[in-house]
Length: 363
View 1 (cartoon, rainbow, N blue to C red):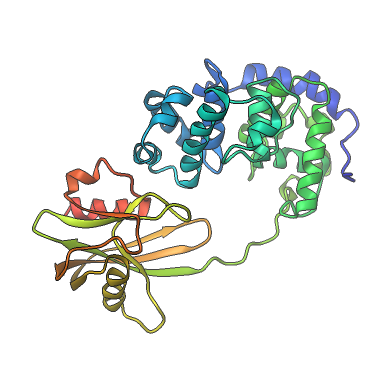
View 2 (view 1 turned 135 degrees about the vertical axis):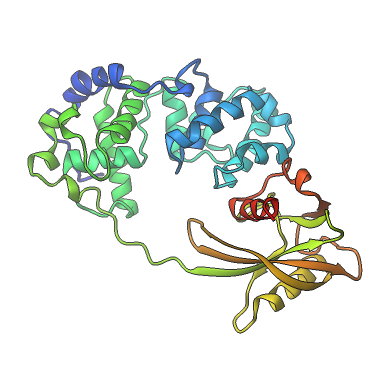
């Protein structure tokens, strides 16, 4: 049981302050119009680890391409990944696609309202489950995302590390107690909206906050201390060599990554991690032999690409190469193609490889 305590009057303030505030302060967002379980589901998956203003055009494009669960389920995975291209965390798109197929097969095309059935779908964790059940089905579940964590830790002056599972569980219990018998959908949206627009990470707009009268952090002039997160370990830098392998002056080789793992199902310029003591040209020759069983001459450098993923920094050196010898084989990749730049416009690539495409366009 959580030892965290709500300030006196917090639940009442949520009812008389937070909910009325949300009615007039909420932003006009496309997923709040014509709300259906499917639209809620897609928006919540897209909004994980991504800013609202970034998500809006992706959401609108997605709904035009896949207006229903059935349309998503019947789509080709490459089409789904292309529509998602640029949002990152591509496992979210793959999970959406697989889950849509399961919804059609198991539930007749309707997203289930049963908590256990919903949680059994790929990509549906505790947060997404609570969001869908509350926003789409009106069930009494409190959500806990980064915005809500920030509001709760300040409201209750909780100085413990929110990365610790016990603290995370305690915050989830706090959110449930603050919700009480209030309508869960509006409450959850109001808490997330408050964190996104008022209870900001740097300088909160406390004067506009409906919880101002009961907020412990504000009363103690300590808002800058919350939420507390332990420092993450420095993330490593990975050096990669990659190849633009030309068959003729217009056609080059790309490979599709295997399912699962980072960027699964996406297309890339073949290559891989440089081993200790190995120069980049040797790395490229080795990787193309291991991945596609081809021999290449490594020529001039095309571009240096830097990109940061959630758990490492990428430093990629890309060389023009000339193909020689036997035809490629898909040994350590899912597929390969000889393509032109125009062909690549129809295929899904990660951000680092799209920077290579941009360099090729300007060559």
